[in-house]
Length: 194
Length: 194
Image (tube, rainbow over all chains, first blue to last red; front, side, top):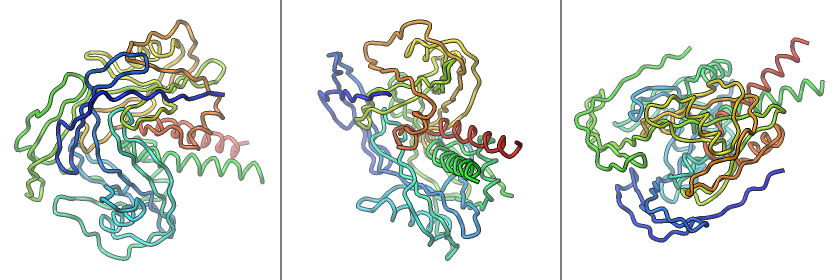
């Protein structure tokens, strides 16, 4: 057994040193640890919460995307993902982003996973949904700053892409590996029960 | 089959708008998309590369940690993790951090996974190692700003913690879910072959 205790720091001062709408907001804090040590500089980034979607078509394929990512200068397979608008429910944001970016909608949705992009210096969370039985009901409607390609992958193609390390975004790799772990664990249990 | 094309943006200007040693460095760039659209503001954070470790003892238990994380104000189970020092090899950084934070060392190490914390606005990477057969050869040597608890979990305790969503850091959840997916897939294959 293990026991996790939470020993929060005391915030001695907190002020925004950078604000630019939804793009980047940085707080500078002076904090005091439970042992009395003062850290004079701690940065926290306040982004909106994010969503992403493991979207599976009626015939069992996966709706994936790719787009150029300027932080690393590369393009890789990704889940459909986006930002939750102010006042929007996470599920509504996920359904909106999937429709806008890929044209897929419908199906049965459930919350799958809740992750922190970085609990050290990000205050926001990312929520993953699984959508089973989606269909292409319309065209994608991308903004002029978006250049998103949609890719329909079979289950084995997606697992092979994961195995080759092609899904590099941690917030996407975690829910997908959880998906395949659960599927495999489920299959193992079924075989035990046969 | 799917085909991923890389269409890099053109950088029209790039300058640091914030620099604070290893803690936070932000570049502001003006970029031009392949379709000619100019985005006047793109922020990229330059952190050093990071490492973390799935450390397994000789008797098959997992060396986990917990510490207060001020971005979310919570404490959760984590892998041993840290920053690669300038000029340091990733493996050496991982072995150094495990020894400093937990006192465990030795064993057989292999690279397990390479992830981007956020390919949109982070330029750095996080590399996960698996260390099999580590032993507690010394005491932990933490800095006075560190308050890290070590937790030794059995494999089933760790899987249950993952299932309950207790490992919230995406860079830690992804390699751990990959670990359990591989183990389960391996077990499934073994059962097929019996």
